[in-house]
Image 1: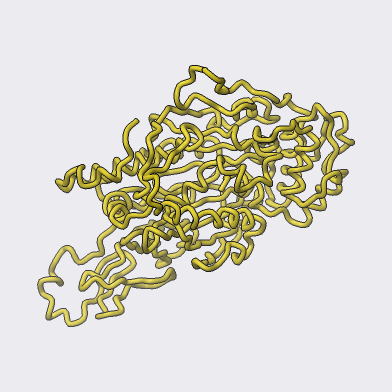
Image 2: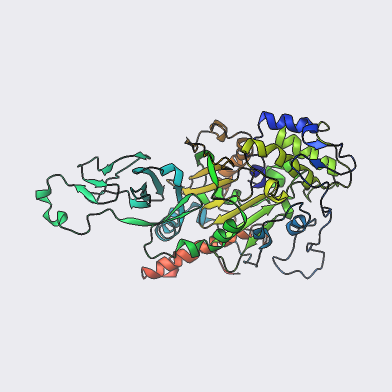
Length: 539
């Protein structure tokens, strides 16, 4: 799915906001016919001129561009930021790319039970993954069951306010202690009644006289995973010798802590759906904008899909980023649209305002500035926050980060989304979580977090309450995913071909996955030759 298609419409503009937009006198003072806007949000009259052509490296016949250097015609993301009417977050100026190779990625990585077992053994047990939000386990004994691959953890709040994660397995004969989230005073095995406190210490052992070898053992407490807390999220890692979260996610932490008020959020929506494809197939569909031209053609009049910026940093192997500019047309369109056409197309899609009934803008207007001003004016009273100093990019653009292996938070302000993926029961299924966040109101009153809606394979995202128009966009992607999974099993071409730039983040994720598998094999004294057919070739 093209990420921008969700970020901008995830908040499902309320009826009052739509009316405000339609009644342009409430938002826009003047006709905007000369390209000058004076918005109630305090936006400047016009702002810097938006670039129309750009200076990116467009390949020419017989040219000498190296792999990974070519870019689509049109303004780059950095040039769009130059025309922002507000100060741009410093994190958005930190962008980087280096060529990662162009060899095909073996299809078997998406379909093989053997490769899924390698992922489970050497990657899922050794990486930092988001388990839940802190407000899901607010009180002592509150817990969330986090299942991934063959592993299961009980993530629970302690009496002192700390959070711990225990392996969800009875130390007697292995029975799962908890199947569901909830609040308890202890964890009691349903099979024989062995019971542990929420602090993981053994409290009751029926017929203790028969277990002198257990009762006196120092190893009667539930084994733990490592836990990290950041911006309201709880992360877990089952490797006791893992890299600290603070260094593992350093780039993500630095960007969000310095540029985006991510900690000051609460969840307004949460749903998890079982999807009929491999977790990597699903994750990849939500990690690039290349597919917009075929899957989401309705956004091309106001989304610069092929001009998106993809960042993979050499000093940050676990973090990458995608930024798609909105309020600018796609370079795929053969005709050059006027600022009025871009604004009309955006408002028609986002707020269902018929073309010609919204604001009027002149030929020299910056459509990004116009739409950003409308969004500020509409969102501020609804969210209860002051948005006057928030950049155009933060209220407009799709800014999607990825923390390996499967945590993808949106930056920006328009009720940012967060994605999480986990493998399913077979390589042909997976689970995708979607959270929608909103800023905590300036009043300081924190609303109750949303409860999770669970959707099975046969259900649509449209069945999730409060998902709004976001569900329509997701369903466009859902139609593709089972066809991708089926096609990957074809006996024709053996590999998947990635673009050098637009799909560089996908290749980086596969290369990082290989590193974890090879490190695990080496630690177990196993040979690389065992997995060679699955590995991503160099070059």
